[in-house]
Length: 512
Image (cartoon, rainbow, N blue to C red; front, side, top):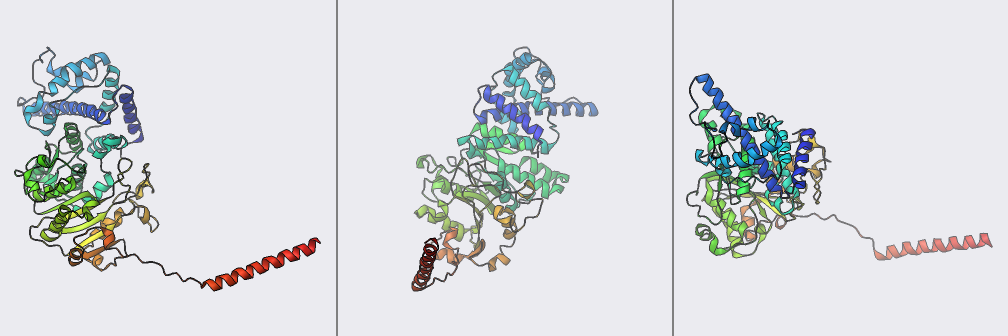
């Protein structure tokens, strides 16, 4: 976690951007992203210089080459370590007229980051603001992966308070729950076809790093982790830059974060390429049928984006691959032919593992849509025996627009550092979801349908026309209440009335 002092610095810089006329939170993060990238280039160049000094060989491909740019500014002066010490006015000219044009020429090295920086725009409005931002960023220990990663996550969390831009951010604890349940391994290839700020990919990288630390001692797996494990698609160039930087600051050297309109472009070249898909795709309602990739609409004829994304996920997964994806509730019980066919495919043609119903306010303040997480495995040959259902009623935060924590910090999240009591469970279901998920093929099969989680045999789901809504199968036990006979109640009322009349008579006698 970043310190309160660092948070207050970030907050002050954020306020400076807003007072300086940049009110779009994505633009604020974009400008900070550029500066973080510029600082990284300087760090890489320094490492290359140190290596060259040790080996006695020249740098093969220097980031900052000898000579000067088109405006006769020496490339050496474009380094972060050089311009950060200049006065505000000189720094503003150097960054705006020299460093940013230089950034746009870097795409030739083929890295994800340089590719997304090629159309970099410098929009910081004045020298004073640039100087404050550079000073703040320079004081952050960028060698510490946790610190710089948490810093960027704190910046991204501000998107959630910015109205319509909040769609880019799925709550971190929900992402972590999904990742923990899927449990990706060191040999997996993970994809998010609507990656936004790359929250799912980042959390997956942290999980793999934490649970499989040995992979970094195996050259082949280490190379796979940094260059081929993580794939993300988006069609917003700003989010591609933001997502790429998020992965960089969490220690992934070169993830594959690419421009792609996932529903409009053919997935033939990506089919059966990934072993894990983690996603919260946008639910725009419907799109133009003619603009949708034909290899998706051939499966089911629909304009609904949530259904098209499910078809896409099945196409992208390798046989045996797993998916954990957030869908609106309508996917679970929609009555259209397309809705029913998608659910039938998941149950009959593949292996539907679980349906986890999320609390209604989990995406507030910017969306109140009811959602669930589908967990399924691509098999192409069926395999669904039982589907595990869990009705999550609390995630640790209030379900209103304020989303304030209901428990101390050590009792929040999927794996809280302090044990939860029986009174804490109604406020945070996440640890229980993870624990019961591990028992889904054992003790959970014996749970009654009156419980918070239970399993439903495939035959029951087929009998219900593939309806996957939890309420279709959950049994509600009503407390038996014995009502007294009305004549007994009337007799009691008459006795009370008689007592009142007697009391009034006695009072009158005393007063008279």
